[in-house]
Image (cartoon, helix red, strand yellow):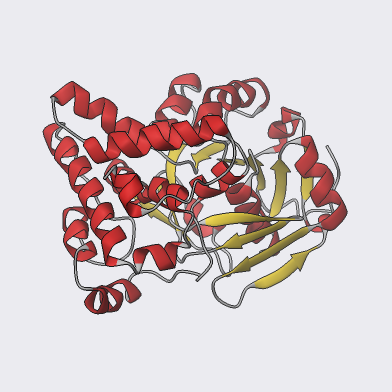
Length: 343
């Protein structure tokens, strides 16, 4: 493990396991807040960041460079032995593997927080790590890697973690990055999944999120897709809660999406700030020729829909299109709304 600056040993050791875009941004913000942070990441990322450090920016005023000696870098999971807190940020498909590494190297007293998309990852970690403090988490905001160690937060929001012993949220919160503990984490995770269904549409269109959501025709497609998913969750007896602050219930989100644009902008402005150039992480994955998490999003809805005999043609088509262009590996296809709808 590459050694960083001398750390304040009174602070907990935090290992970000799987430091991609979200992991590097969160880890960087924690290091900026004088936490003792190690980024467990791939060799090529370690080499890049060890040379250039981290640059963190966002939709607001954040624009800061962090020297490599403000945190530690590791490519060997043996670094997990030093962790008091492990923030898991690997893609869903790698959850089982990181669980094995945690079981092999980490202290049984370490707190493990899944900051991953989808609703199943915390359960996979718990099953593989019996008796350990494993908590679900939600990253409400969006992060894109800009290259050269630069990571940009494109939307507003905080991090929600499952309530447990101690005061973990208070321990982790730093300036510019707030953590909150919540009891109703499963409902919040399903709510986040519903919101993340828009990631596939954004990946297929290639449009900035703000431009796409500002177009009423795209918003109607988002609303139709979410309405399909809500019917499936109702049939399965699954409750949802909105991870975005405010009184809006998830079942009312499609109604808001269908509002005239002028009215929608007023409502949306009170809930969410979006960078004009922000795009979804799924768009980023398509652009880089990487596997997406479509199986954990639309794929999850389609699977449940088949179990309950409910038609979900939009979710099925979006899942099919994303998988198709993922296999081709040439980036976002920049499809029109009609092409996505199959008209």
